[in-house]
Amino acid sequence: MGFRKRSRDEHFANDGQPKRILALDGGGLRGIFTMGLLQNIEALLRDRHGGDPAFRLCDYFDLIAGTSTGAIIAAALAIGWKADDIKVQYDTLGKKVFESDLLSGWGVLRAKYDESKLIAELKNIYGDKTLLGGPELHTGLMIVTKRIDSGSPWPIGNNPRGKYFVDRPNGVIGNGAYPLWQVVRASTAAPTFFDSQAITIATAAGKKDVTGEFIDGGVSPFNNPSLQALMYATLDGYRIGWPTGADRLMLVSLGTGMADPVVKHSAIAVKHGIGALGNLMEDSAVLQETLLQWVSASPTARVFDREIGDLKNDLLAPAPLITYLRYNAQFTREGMHDLDPALADNTKRLEDLSKMDVPENMPTLHRLGTLLAARDIKTEHFPSRFDLSA
Image 1: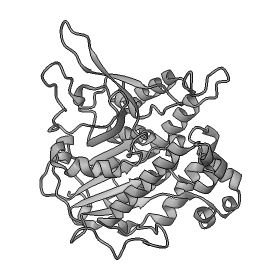
Image 2: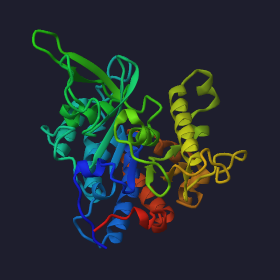
Image 3: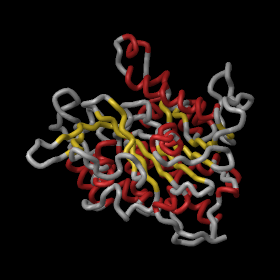
Image 4: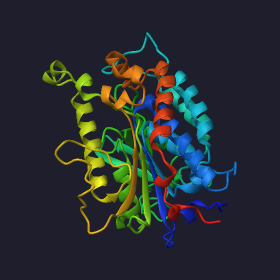
């Protein structure tokens, strides 16, 4: 079957048609693992829609959400990049931006990496003049950031009906006028790795500009942006208002691999409080997955523990609110046993793969993402009711 390309506004329209959300986790250079999943999904969906070489994931998904490294990929998808091309560009970005610098400081006095390299790469991908509300974006996009000077998570999106999309009184600048590279850069400003990103949010003649200081959206409950994307699409305040129901709303959530908590947070580390933030991020991610499985119809539902299982016999609402797909891998002995047996017993290597800033890991991470996709992603996971119309 063929398909008809739609505009951004058609993607956002509450037109009675089924809607599709793609959500991409943060995780530093582990985002290359996500690319292995995306390449598989794009090929699968392209075949489903007639094999047209012009098919892109921005044609299928009505909203693409990303946090941190997921924001980099999400924005590239939204402006129409092919998954294979993003993978090539991501390889280049990772090697340039996370190049080891023996003269750099670490964490306390200065960021570990030079943000100027990251900024240059982001401008190269999106164009330095592209705005969040610009015509270059072919579908909905939501980027999760955190405004550190106010302590609040900021989901920034390109919904044209959004309350803060256009300029407002007192010189408040609408989200649509933010440079796309700057919004993505804000979401990737991981503490200790990169400095925060300032964004001018209000300006008026004769007055000092008001700026916000933004850091990585992963330093919030939404390193996995799935729940925030669902809220963005359905809560009245965000002015999108898509209806819920397993036959009307699908959420596809892609991870960057889960570190082994036993390896990552040893008893000594926990005793001294090291890694507490990482533990909190992982707890938030598991809570989100639990909630989403609890309210959904999910052919990919996983077992959380021996007490609650996979929640297939539990449902919070009278009927599923969404169709939910989650694809991710655990960098543990058990998680690698069927995926890559050679890695299963290599605890040191699994620990190294969990790191977010090692370019040398990217080939292995991409291979693991490709292997997971081949094993776990099935065409029947994408119901025909969500196919695009010709």
